[in-house]
Picture 1 (cartoon, rainbow, N blue to C red):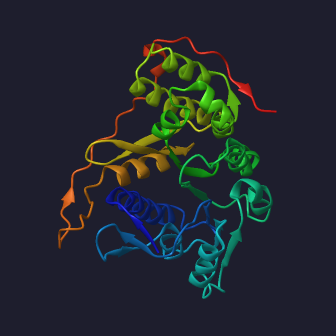
Picture 2: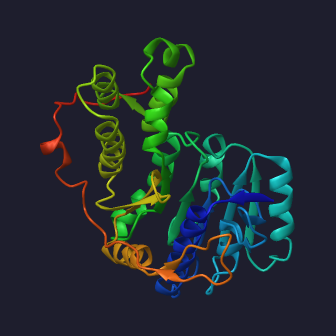
Length: 308
C-alpha cells in the first residue's frame, strides 16, 4: 500500500478517462497493447484518509474493450508479486509482469508484441529513472509499420519533473558533479548540450529558476518532436501552491491528441481527506506554450550532443 496526495488521484483519473476513449476508438483492431513502465502498487491510499483508489495497472486491466496485450514493469519484488496476483485471472489474454528495470528490459519486451496493434505506453517514474534510450526504443517499435501503413506510432504519456531537475542540479556545481547528477540528466535527455546551457545560465543567475524549469520541459518536448511526435500536450500537475511535475502526452495522431485534451480539460474531483463528498473542479483549458518557445527564450542554445 502506498499513500498519495490528491494530485496523484487527478493523474490517475485523467489516465482512466483516456484509456477508456483509447479502447473505444481502437475497438475494431484485433489487438490493443498497453505498456506500463513503472506499474507500482496495486493498493493506493489517499493521504490522510481511508479512501483507496486503483493504480494504473488495475485501470488498464479493467478497460472495455480489453487490451489484448498488457506489459507491466516493476523492479520491486513485493509490488511485482502483487501485480501478478492482480493479473492472475487474465488467462484469456496476454498479460505479463516483468520484474526488473524497464530501461534494461524494454527492447526484449517490445520484440514480443504486435507492431500492427494500437499501443499506449504509460511512463510514470518517481523521479529521473526513465532513460531517453527507452523513449527512443518505444518510439521505434512501430515506426516502420506506421510509416508504411499511415498508422500511428506508440502513444506515450510521460511524467517529466522539470522542478526535480532544478532541485537536483541546484546551485552548487561541484556538489552536483560529485553526485553524478549531470550524468543522470544526460540519460534523461539522451544527450548533452542545451540543458547544460540552461543550467549554466541558472548558475550565473542570468535566468530565474522558473525560466530554467520551463526550458527543461520544453527541451524534452523538442526531443519528442525530433522522434516524429508532432502532437504534444503538457499538463502541469500542481498542489495549491507549486507545480510538482508535468505530464507530457506524445502522439502523431491528431485524434489521439483531441482525446487527451478532452480528458485533461474535463471537470474532475480532486478528493480532500477532510471531506466526505468530492466536488468536481473545473480544469484549465489547454495552452500551447511550447510552440515557438525558443524565440522568446533569452539564450541561444547549442545543438544536442547525443550520448554514445
